[in-house]
Image 1: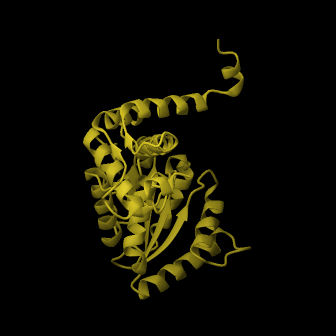
Image 2 (image 1 turned 180 degrees about the horizontal axis):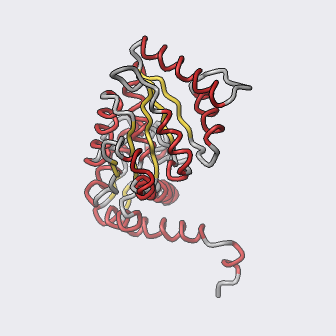
Image 3 (image 1 turned 90 degrees about the horizontal axis):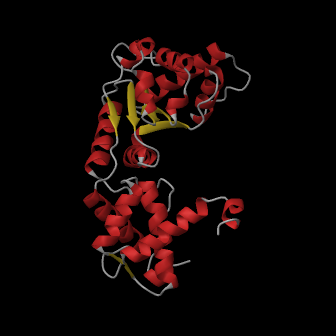
Length: 281
């Protein structure tokens, strides 16, 4: 709606995890380095955690974009299944025809596939999002799945991506065999106040294709955005999208704290059920 007014080629604050919009804060950059090291050193397991909306999936997508020619990737988003159903989804995402196969047959098909990829010098990566929802039984089965290997190389790299609760699960005493195979758990930190300012500017520049003539967010507006969002990128995106709309309606390309306050108020009103709002005095 407001793209033409501000001179954007696309919306700057979409909440989809587009790696082109990844602002590489210190923590996001280190997370990318951790993933890259773990996968290409064939560590077997990698674990990335962070609060909801902190940018975990965006970092993972950035990794895939960077190294796509040398990767074979399966991405599993739904984790509340018994392992056999999970294994079926994994095989299908790798493009394997496993309909009608039992668990043992699917594992054999997976092993053959992994050996083929290894012969092509491709790194096979299984990414499991929302991994904090995996059952202990599924986690143990995944540990066993990682035993598909040559004499000196893991054939499958398994990346757990989840909320901080995943750390507690992996540190449970009954998970110690799995935990010992993970070379550290990387938690992505929320953005600091100055990083929020750089984050906002970066996304505006990506959406515009240049740094000249982009909307100006005043220092006090950044303060308000930081306090509202606590440095969580998804909340920053939701608020900034609303604030840019307010600027468009008021024909104003300079975003100040008053406009941010209005955006916060509108977002909070939207979260109140309609039935409750009707009976306000």
